[in-house]
Image (cartoon, rainbow, N blue to C red):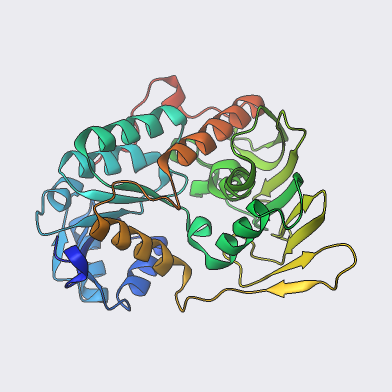
Length: 341
């Protein structure tokens, strides 16, 4: 690896050319220890336009060609999540390290396949859950684990977009893993499980679109300890996008944008509220990239900030919620969507 031992830059490839790939690439190019040397798309013209836009030297008109480039240290997978299993698996099989966008896959079966493949090949794999890499969130977890608010009793979090989204939008397309739960609900669920681990009980209610994907969803998670999480997600309403963690000796409140926060407020009886910040000089996508590059230089195949077992636990919760909602994807009926190379 070019960046081994902290010398030189880590060489990135980008798989997909949509909006999130563009945002990630723009942030990555501002990092002194990173190079973006290749981009791949199923359409050569898309790869060429993306490469020209960002000054990337290599453009591949296929996933397989990108994955086969031995000069690449790590590939960022930014396809729709219906294609994550195929795209990330192809890269891992070719010997590349992978940072895969959230939600990690459509379901836990696909997630387990990727994790098993990475572990069998000794290759680095991480879900791009920027919340877990955020210094403010990391400071919050330290305080909670140190007992600053006592024993956690409840977590509240929501993430909703106002829409409306047309029937042909990816968020309403079952073939692309549409619905609020996987695209947005993954954030409240990941936030709750960061603090409490995998729940012992999952309940879900919601509204389904004519295409039978969830558009407005509420989750109630329960733990044998007595702790609960009340979470919601929507593609029909602009929710507050806030979060709160309540313990037996205080609470922590996050303002709008809890999934990549700049601050939170700690409330404890008999004390003034404390506003807490933690800055690292990086933007959200850069924090993900920095953790990936730190792991690669250290020879780690899994990130302690975004552990694969935690990713699998979140996928199990999302599976359980989707089952209760009655949302089914073509993949659930034995399909193998997103196989384009």
